[in-house]
Amino acid sequence: MERITITIEDSQLASLDEHIRKRGYTSRSEAIRDILRNAQSDETTLQDPSAFCYATLSCVYEHETRELSKRLTELQHEHHDLSVATLHVHASHNECLEVVILKGTIGQVQALADEILTQRGVRMGHLHIVPSPDLVDGHDHHHHHHGDTNTD
Image 1: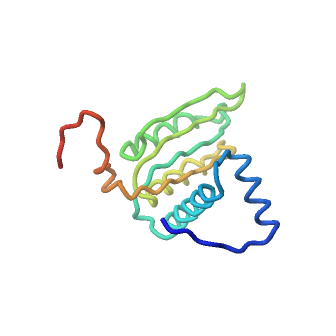
Image 2: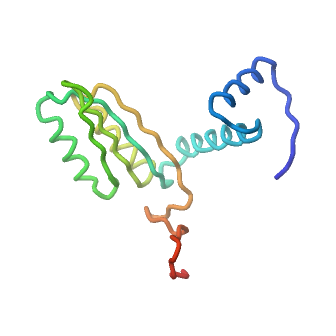
């Protein structure tokens, strides 16, 4: 790692220090590295739809909307290669919260999210994409569990 010196406005430094305090970073360097990683991730998301990623899609929808639950389930089944897991929560009498964990290319994940979030009865939603350079063709080729004897 290299040590650098930066010059920033007093108000920016105060904002950085407040961010550090709220998040619990132990140093300004850790916080700045994390901010830069997030910026790099955002750039990858915008520039390369063929890059592989993990993602979470969260949405709140009206559970009384005609056949919406069925349509959401069917969309996930149609894209079973992207959908890893789903958490369904009965948030209130009228609303459900669903969180879907996805894995695939950024373009595929974004397209599925758009299909889900534009369904009539979906009140709000958010797609959080985490680009993963270790994913190739949707498979993690660099991760080994303790006790793995695979040497590829």
